[in-house]
Length: 590
Image 1 (cartoon, rainbow, N blue to C red):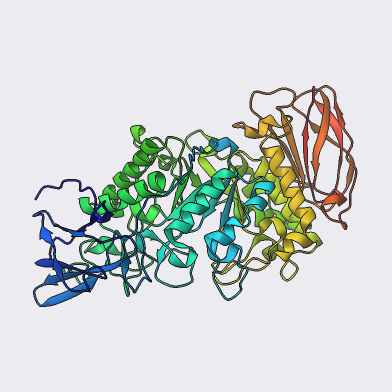
Image 2 (image 1 turned 120 degrees about the vertical axis):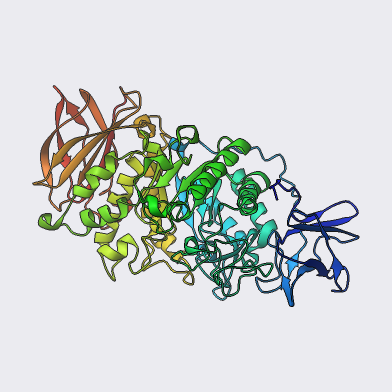
């Protein structure tokens, strides 16, 4: 039968009741049970295209329901794959009225070159009660803190309904429902509205490369049909099903599954007012083995779906940012769909975390390796520096058998002097490099250890290291040109002007249009050596004023606090006081 796009799939609240529609193409009959009919079976009508529907007069939001699917001798009781709420993932679907009073929310996210992202995990970011997972309300309580820090975009790790009561969020069972333990749909919409009031956009991490795992997944063999002992209508039923997370790759070539995913994108952007989507492991949506340049295992229908998702998101909201975690240097990920690309706004730059660990793990010059940083500083995708998201740490680099950057370079002393010095250098590089900078929760107050899904951030650190937090505020303000003297940090351009491998010193020039208040020079001394009259070239003659000195005692009482005077540049060169283990930022007033 030919495919026709279906509207109003799921439970749709009407004036006089609720309409129900479900896709179950191999069912012989389908019934509806719920609190509105005393859990007695009410038949659905076949629409002769795989969909079944009915209308229940008098049904209202808040009532629970399930579908009963018959195929041969099988009687399958299933949750609604489109439900917007569940009592629990193993419980019942709940009718939800999707209406929400946005109170004239007309927020629009800043352009990519002005974005500063903060990645967080709702369950652990702020948890006042250590016995209960964090919620959207708890995160909202810290929105003023984040706004004060200078962050203008929050990236939430997955918040869709998950199979366990605690997790990273990547084991998703239903993509339309928002995790009830976090506060559910209403709690999330309220959070988005509160973020927007503070001029903070919200990016949601979504997972379409796999569903499940399969053990407790209602989507698995949803209507009873399956092949090759695999997952049935929502999944591939051959070799293409295999992923690192089980044999649960959605069938991207099946039109109804495409609509299931595209309608979810529509929900996030249109109904939930999110300002961006970060898509997990897109490389496993376009290739079975997660490989680049591997035609034998490519999924062309997966690539086409990625294009459709990006086109749809931007059709709804042209300012929305879509970010791919693709684990590759394939610039076609961020090329426009009209040019054959997948159409993402940006992709995660995965090289920076390892490069930082090589460059900042020691002050012993012989063991400092800067080679990785050179390429990371100048890398761009599709000729655009802001088509990449750059970071010191993320949920992945701070876990998975390793730990946060400051813990790795100073094991057991993650907030000690060395860790604080090096962390500020890393932050300065991220916040002065071309790309969209991203911070990871707690990074700014020296959170120790590795990321996990059970240990909450220690917010006492924000008080104990308030001066380090202040340094981040200063860096972000410079990044966003809040003082009208570092405009070049919002520009595309970078020139690695000075590389001194002997002394482990580098300097790079950032600019947009060039000239006073635009040109910026960033000077990094990776070695623990003071240079009183260090000679280097500058892009313009005149006076260069220090805007940031990572060794300032105001950032930590035990910092060396070596004064760095203005630099007078003549004939393209100047003499600089260069503190040990330091990051310096200079610009001109005139």
